[in-house]
Amino acid sequence: MTDERLEQLLTDYVIPEAPDSKVNERLKAQMTEAFADRERKEKQNMKKFGLKRTAVLVAAACMAFGAIGVASTGRAYVTGGSMPGEYTVFSELEKVEAKTGLDVRAVEKFSNGYQFKEMSVMHEQDHTENGTVIGDYAGISIQYEKEGAYDLSLCMDDVEHAEGAEAREAVAQQEIAGLTVKYYLDTYKWVPAGYELTDEDRANLEKDNYFISEGVDEVSVNQVCCVIWEQDGVFYDLLCTKGEVPAEEMFAMAAEIIAQ
Image (cartoon, rainbow, N blue to C red; front, side, top):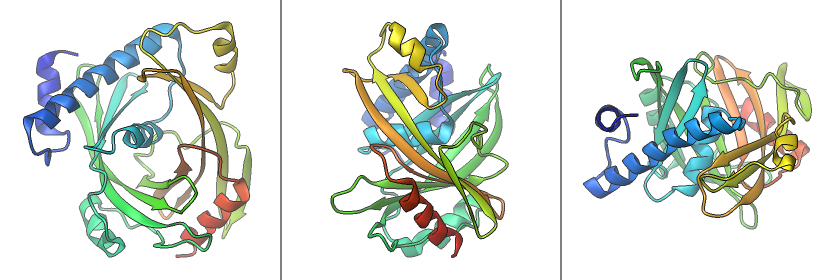
């Protein structure tokens, strides 16, 4: 990607609220690395994961100033940005819905103790390979926290724009209020740039629930679990990016959202 194209994306799209050039320079550097990472993974045949999951995983590592997610989607690519902590009061959800054009279901506090922490608008764009914008839309991300447990994220998008409603087989699924809710438990291995895949890595990548991505200084492995479903034209993805939450607990939380 050229410097001119990066500047255009930063000007037209990526977090216009960024307060100073230092932040923009960091965003530009991360976007550059994101595109380079995509090209490296294509060369190494690393498996890629969807935009929403990517955006949340990147956000988890970049909470100080926002996030950029990049995912390959056929012949085009998708960019996404958010400003973590943009909204810190649950009652502002109505304002966020107005910004995104989404009518969503969400809870402030779950019966298992998870409660609202913050939310943000996820700004997303579809691009052709040469950088032409062919779609401009927004989603909603809500973060939940619980003492002694990993944070959870609830990502919501218009079904029309949700990337890949997981055609692969789920670990478990339940019918809740007439809706099919699927549970997935995946392993993500993060590796440094230039990492050479081992025979074990290649074998693991043959699995539906194993992913490898570059972008860290040291190799690390963690589990990511989620439940997904569609309701009234909205795609819901409730996920934990740092560990396993039992399927039954995730199904129960989904049921509370669905009942709203």
